[in-house]
Length: 246
Image 1: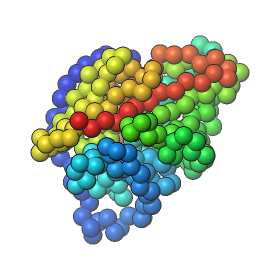
Image 2: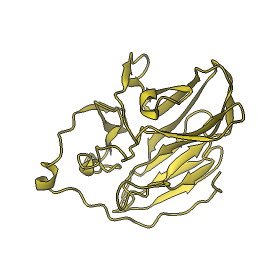
Image 3: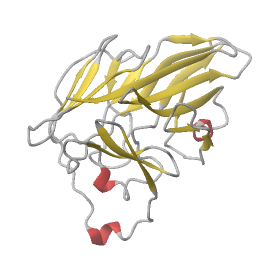
């Protein structure tokens, strides 16, 4: 696995699509949600994050929301996507992603959650797991939680589970790996609030990992990578992230 490190990313200029260019892309439907700290929107087709703004300053988007229309296609990663590196029975390691070739999600009843979906189909037919994703308001904190369920008859070893953090990097992004790791996203104007991303449950920040490949220039957003666990047949495990403004 990639070695641990902690560093401020150099600011990356992100240009929003002009109104003329945006009109050339298919329209995107979103649904708005809120917690006491954050206003956010999920795409209705993928339930990935399309906007994330602090209640204290709705003019600032911590994501690349202004570019959502041009980034809607396969190959572009979003907060709410997932990558997996796993193997069965000591076999070869296999890599899976939820964004390379998206398939329709299966919306599930949002029991004690804001939005819930089975996103397994987008990983391809060979995935031995069921992957459920939930967006939760946990006592005022926004939580992104994945449930990995081994639906095969063999143990599944998960070496890495990567959660892309597609955020506005222009103010700097600092990662501190560890069992109680944290990623801090600063605003370009230096003003507060800033965004802190923390583990939900057993989700250590084992590595802060840049993408292996990029759909377009400037798409070098790292992922929160956790892993190193085994799932017996029928077993499940929750991993996830908590979004806090300070």
